[in-house]
Image (cartoon, rainbow over all chains, first blue to last red; front, side):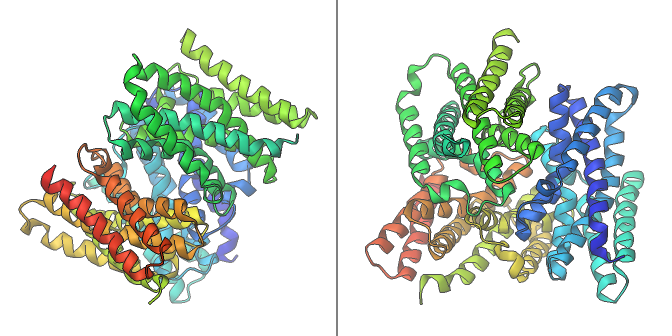
Length: 197
Length: 197
Length: 197
């Protein structure tokens, strides 16, 4: 399995988990069902969309795979009918966001390598794919972006994971293992800062 | 008249009306004339610009039709010298914004169909074209985005209108009628929620 | 020296100075080193990135010149270790921002002319290249965007400089002098409004 083969799976997984966090933010803002779908979709596809625009991928990834928009809408509907069951939606948002980061950063790294980007731009695309959806979610919802919270190792986690992937691929490690190491690094740094910070 | 022929007219009309709302927001923020032009232009072309970027239309629509920037500047000048005549600028913003939505959503649907998009992406482009200009206006001006206000049926109105257009075109209705039905649906839902909400 | 030859130098200079302002905002927000790098990079490349996306330049300028990302990171590291030496970081941000504006507007004008844009779109690209990085910096950092402050002649300065460049080039002035006049105009208007406003 080449790293490029992993892209569709990674994209679907990160879109889904980010969409859940977007729908939970819509729930905190007490929006209606369409508001849930809007925030789930904005958060789910935001990072990958900016990555594709910057790399000159025309059109962006979800225009060719509209099933992704169905996925974010279904995630919104799911959260709409179940969010009241959770005691702490904010804590749930934080953990799902950490999980989504851990999938989105390798997805961004993978697409950048497939587009022929060098190591520096690849790291930048990993960070952008990971952080932009959540940043758009928090900015539009008027919440303080997670990247601005002190002691959260938010951008640091995405940076660390992307560097691990680029270094491993640079020394000849098979792409799929580099991407897994990338995701594990992101999650370990982010979860560690949440538990210890 | 094919639906594609309607694009320039719809784009001009929605750019003009959104530009007026942007200039009125600049007036509430007590900016100078260039600030009026900035907000009128950001609001007027924001939605269609994001739509074109996502669909891979290079360059975006107003780069090839710079008259649109003249139009937003004239709208800004007009509002700059007349805004003091209106008793409630906020109410005027809301109604002009509803009118602009009712023109921008069919414009977005039309461009997406012309670019060969399927029904799901077409609905998404209608929503994006309708909502993004006003969202940028409110975010930059530090006002609460209209899409976040409860009971406003804001995104819902654009969603409803875009679905009506896609369904009508899908069952063979002539494009121009589908676009008119789309605009009427958007305005009816939005105006209804403003009057009854 | 044709105006196009000036682009790489102008881009590097405006990216560097904007990056310093971004890092200083990160310093005010008491972020960690990676937060500094994030804000320095967002501010440094934001305006030119939007300009390239709108003009359909694929990929955007820094994807092909990753040294620019090294430059913004170095600027962030520099500010991280020296920001405490400055008595008024806010005043320093304002003056560096004025300097960056005076370099970024001619850079935007230059790229637009190189891409074959007409005078109106060229002026728009000068304004966008100048203002968008700082606007993204302030919006993400939850500070009031400079463009919204009254009596600041912020957008006006970029507008004035871009018009000067377009008029001078239109009457046959050599490109490099037109760009210099553009930068001087931007700085004079902005610095004047800061000293006298």
